[in-house]
Image (cartoon, rainbow, N blue to C red; front, side, top):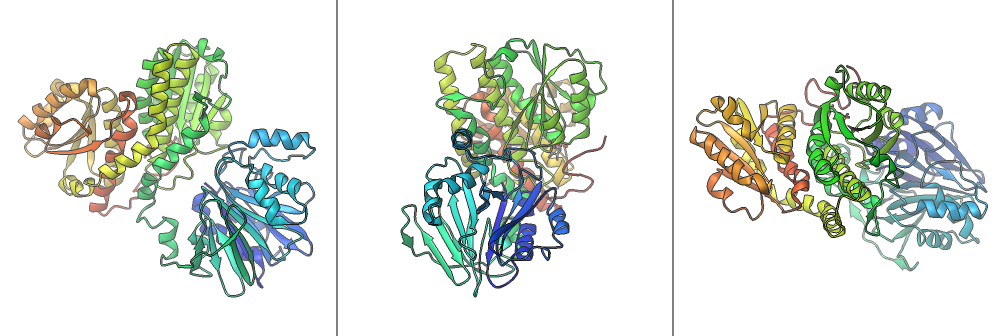
Amino acid sequence: MCGIVGFTGPQSAAPILLQGLKALEYRGYDSAGVAVMDGGSIRLEKVSGRIANLCEKTRDGQAVPGCTGIGHTRWATHGAPTDINAHPHLSNDGRFAVVHNGIIENFASLRDELTQKGYSFVSETDTEVVVHLIEMYYRGNLKTAVMKTVSRLEGSYALGIVCTDYPDTLFAVRQASPLILGIGAGENFFASDVTALVAHTKNCIYLDDGELAELSPESVKVYDCAGQEIKKSVNRITWDLEAAEKGGYEHFMLKEIMEQPAAVKSALTPRIKNGEIVLDDFDPDGSLLRGVSRIVITACGSAYYAGCAGRYAIERLSRIPVTTVLASELRYDDPIIDDGTLLIVLSQSGETADTIAAMKECKRRGASTLAIVNVVGSTIAKMADHTLYTYAGPEIAVATTKGYTTQLAVLFLFALYAARKLGRIEDAQYRALLRQLKELPKKIQQAIDMAHSTEKLAQKVHKAPSLFFIGRNTDYAVALEGALKMKEISYVHAESYAAGELKHGTIALIVEGQPVIAVCCNEKLSEKTMSNIIEVKARGAKVLSVAVQGNRQIFSVADDVVCIPPTEQLFTPLLAVIPMQLLAYYTAKANGRDIDKPRNLAKSVTVE
Ligand code: AGP
């Protein structure tokens, strides 16, 4: 996710663009830039790092003259966060500049075509194909050139465009990425969301997919995908700036929980083409996988628990032995790692010190490394032999949600991919599982909708001195993450136990009224887990169970039930975790906690 802004009017554009980018910084912050019309040419200023670097370089925009311009703050998806890869991108003839939020899925073929036609590329980004296409199609009418360009694009894009032949005009196009026009008096704006507009105007127009806008200081025109001018209603922004950053949600964590269907879709869609899984450049012919004798998954915290949940699918489908090891343990162990080991490293930030250290040790012992990370160009991404980005977009809340579920989605992709490459799955089963995988974003939304009772259920547990989370097999992996979410944001002590372990000691802790959260979504083991629920209830426990829709027996066993939609059993952790996230969120809210910034915690633990 990135942030784009545009301004045209009587004032100097650069300071306004920078102010807008600061408001959008939560959308992406690994590089930033502006392009401003300056006496017949385009002045381009862009730097890697935070927007503060750009402000320093341009003296808060004072050093960049001109009254019409575009700006961009980047969350890298294609190409590391460097000055060259930062937006805006210029055409070869210097006549056009473009900013982009989204992913151009067919950029590789377009890049080849444009290169063959003599256009030269300077960056690694998908975006750069857009500005060269505009140059290629331009015959004096920019609207026509932009329409021809976007007709060639596949994927998602919110585009901002300036051209030296149109010195006071901005063009903006929306397709599956948000884009809003700000309507001022003698000045007009566009932005990725209202946060960049509210300081200047509360009158806005929300563009819809396929629409193109042409903005000058005195005029705003919107065209449909056929180029016909259309009338759009002007809306009044009611949010204040801070609320707008959270998209109207009270906390970033809740916003990010709700973003999970889209985030998981971003992780899956670019990697499923014509019924086959393509894991970017990882092992296209399966030769690496054929040499793998074991897989070790290492990470910390929730990333480790994502590994615990994904392990089952990888082992069950690929038949390669998989172990999960905490990175903080692995780094000091004397692990049996060699060139037959594939180390899978999970990390949202890509900067976790323990994970980096464990990865270094395993590389030293000969392991091949596959990183599954969210932050493009992060240390772990750069260190790994192969990297699969999760495309979750910036995750602001310290407690990870979409970071976890997108890691899990990529692990499921990997499991199916490995089984296919190693010839360990029948074609029919492969296609059935792929269909189930593609259904997951929709089912996550259903799980969110089905978990509305968690707000009320949180009232039953938020004052408890401690909580038990229990489950078996894949459900146990979910219980691990559920307990961590609960602890780190609500400060209620919680422990997860393999349900089969209760009778080996921990059931001694069950007293009258003890709340127990039982994850009972593994169909093969649900009878066993329901027996465990009966055992703890017999000793006074109050049980909230997460179960698969259609399991009627659970309602006679547990005190409260939150259901998830049915899916392939191996994939249930991706859905069962949703009620866990929401239960933790509402419990923390009931306890008045600082949900996005819990005490003692950091978003990325870059020290030992
Ligand atoms: C999860 O909610 C926590 N913030 C923490 O456990 C986190 O998962 C862990 O520190 C690993 O971070 P990483 O994914 O950035 O490596």
